[in-house]
Image 1 (cartoon, rainbow, N blue to C red):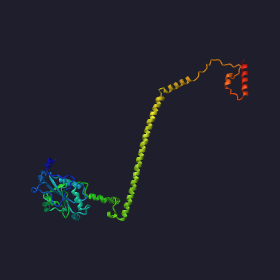
Image 2: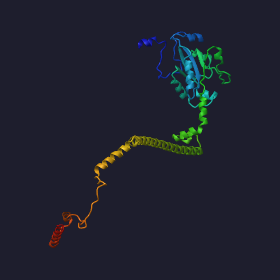
Image 3: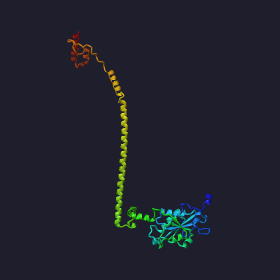
Image 4: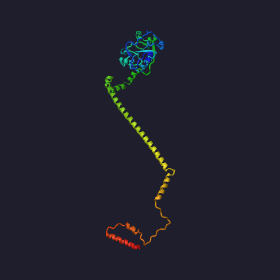
Length: 342
């Protein structure tokens, strides 16, 4: 690990560590600060002589466009020490307009940018030769669009003429003015949101009538959200019911196909039902009594014979006498019957 630290061309700080916050330049160059050209700086400089690049601005509502500009400034040369100047509220309100963030908030935002080595608060609006020499600045980085301000068509004109200007590219689609335009355009939405979060109408500079209107709109939005939630739940329920019904119908169709297939296998055209009828007919014939032949002569009954069954069958079928007289009467009748048969 120590060998890697010695081989590193220049000391590097962890990305989580904020940049140095000071009004004085903190990089003490051991070698004499000689003037460099862009070609010399691109070839590389000694470790104790980093190329000192300066970038200034307002940096209100610090966003990715600011960070990308500083990234380009940091990567202009192999060995770069980036100094960022931030103008105070007084100068900004005087020459540009009112800011959303205070100067302290803007300073603090720059301190936590990974590309920044040093922050210079209360930076001048126009760079002078004394300022450049005091902070030993080699080059100034900014986008190449002329910046007209403070009665000048381009405040970086003299820097460009001195050969100390290095251009960077702007990030399209994002700027502080764009963010403020979005807020102004959607003012009602943001005012309602902040009222809902607990801010007072006085803090938002909202009139009494607008406050009531915004709160009513918030209630209406809540009701709409509830209705939308109920609709989503009902749609989900209906969808689940449809899925279940589809599954049931599909299972019913499978079962019906299986039943029909089994039925056709059992009672189909292959004769299974006929075989079943033949077997059942044979079983009925086996259990039923045989019929008498049709050629046998009919039985003749003599008039002297009684059609009643034999006496032994009659005796068994008669009920027992209920009294001794009935018993003697039955015995006499039986004796008479025997005599007739003789």
